Length: 124
Length: 364
Image (cartoon, rainbow over all chains, first blue to last red; front, side, top):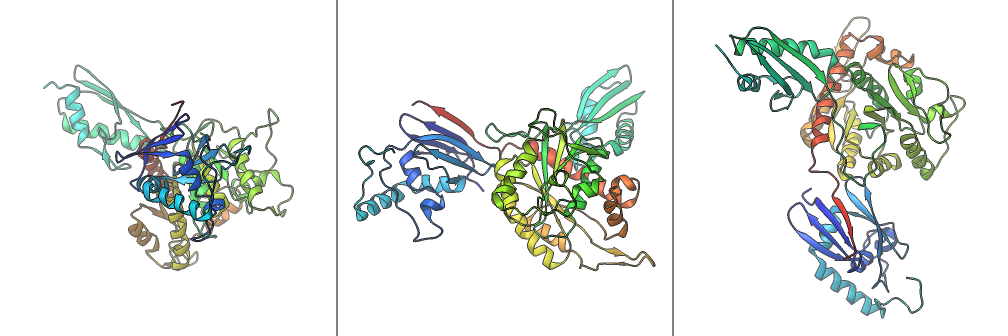
């Protein structure tokens, strides 16, 4: 297991999670990106083809990072979602493939006719 | 012929500690070298409990220095042990009063986890450590019987529980809190994990060097809870030699790897059966299974124990082998395995490479 992070830095204003790995690599993952790719079964489903498209998450914030054993972190979002356990391996994959994964999300949003913006007046 | 501290250090660089397989200088065990005239005195501080062999180590070090420095006069060596706490990173909640947590697991049921866990805990205590046992088998607690403890735990503040004591160990089990030996805990997963959490965190453990956690068989709720909520220093896998047990033990091992818990090693139980009438020794469950598993996963083979009627009789009676027959061969094997576990745990506790990363929150 080479992907061991040395530091997780939560930038609350710019809504970014900066994560530095032991191999020197450093990724900046926007909260929205983390939220729509949450590994929780509520979002990813229980297998390929069962994913639930998350919409309106442009302004989502992170309220807490909770350690899970020594192998993952649970991210608590301010829209109430907090069941995703992000392993180091998963975070590394999100960082490494960010452009492709983000574009894929935008394509799926467009195909569904949905938007990144939160619905007006709605509680995030 | 005069000599100085460096000469003494150099002499000890060539003496290997049989428990760690490293020399005493690399193991950072040599302290306080003092030379006065031709007399030498020094302290050996072991990172693991080893009371039963302190004298042996002292004699070995003294003889080695005498041979390396012929001009030396009086040589006085004092040997003590000090257990290093697991350096858990900020974030993962430390269990108050506990320095290191050792999980004893198997994957398969009936291989002797509880018996092995209780005897290893007693062996560590016999070597001078302060040890506690947490019986994490909510559905089938065995520790109250094995330790010969009855009664209910008291609370000094209405919130926390005092651990029960016997044979020098602190213990906690759901078994202490139920009325009647045959009351089943008919609980679903969430209740079980909550119970484990309470037993672990709400017990007032008193300055333990090691907390040995006796896990139930399997790879489910209880194992996951332990891995996710608690800083386990390392896991010991118990198995019997036959393929059916090994298949499950392998799953147990892979589970720990998946959740980032280091494997201290494998103990093979019921390696041989010795007939109580004629003394014939037989590998009734097969041979070499534990060692093969160790080779496959590159983990250490900690030792093997026989299928001996006395082990069963002693735990059934509430006085496990290590206290019932402390100088017997079986106890000596348990103590050897315990020392080896303690050495590896000391190494793991100081290894920061797998520690939890730093978490920083900024308003940027």
